[in-house]
Image 1 (cartoon, rainbow, N blue to C red):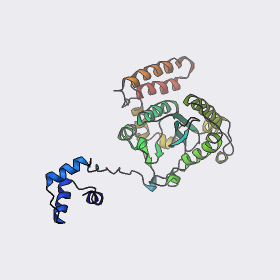
Image 2: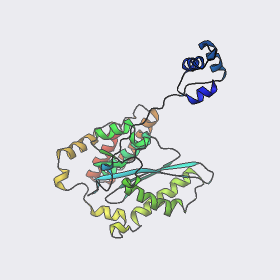
Image 3: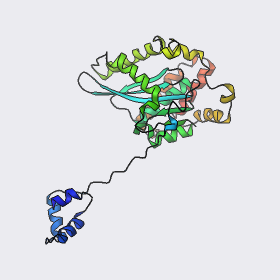
Image 4: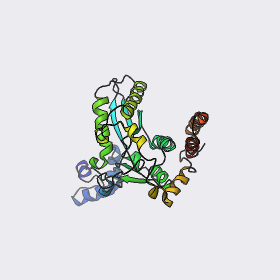
Length: 293
């Protein structure tokens, strides 16, 4: 019987009993069921195949960023502390300016964390037209896709098994691994976060970037228009995206911890209003609205 089960893992005890009888064994269903339970056998659950969303037309060689906030790229990279604890980084890069907009470090990063990070970035830098990524579950989660759709942000999923199609994120990670992960040793998560913040600041403001004419990304970003050329930024789609960003609630507001943390964060943001311009204040209020405060 066990040999049959190994050859036919999707068969239940009734079919196994039928096969045994066909081979000349006296095997009633009740007897096979007793043996089945004694051996602790179970039909393995059928695995639901995850639908891949990526296509090669979404690669950076096909759809190239032409201005600031045109296309952002995001991806994950992993390492460990000196004690062996896994660390995970979420990187978000503006493909046109090469600026590292976020480099979040944690033991694990969920779809909720991704939306939290995006809400902050949308307030600080504006809403991008597209975000490019692979088909990782954190990026293809229904909550994230619906949230981006409501903001009219196009999610560009690359073809499975084709990391070069997310070339800007891959290039950034190559530099990150070579210049940071291969050099630093992390005693703890707190140490990793502190060192990560310092490296990101140096990368954005001091590291010359060859593809930018050896100018640091942050300096190059200041020379770029805040959005697409006027002919593009004045389109109905662009205006609709901005208006939606100002009113869209965060899908995780049912979470009490998230609501409380957003109240604290929003209060800190509002405390900065006296020191910033009216335009910047509008962005901050937009962030508060994004996060449902």
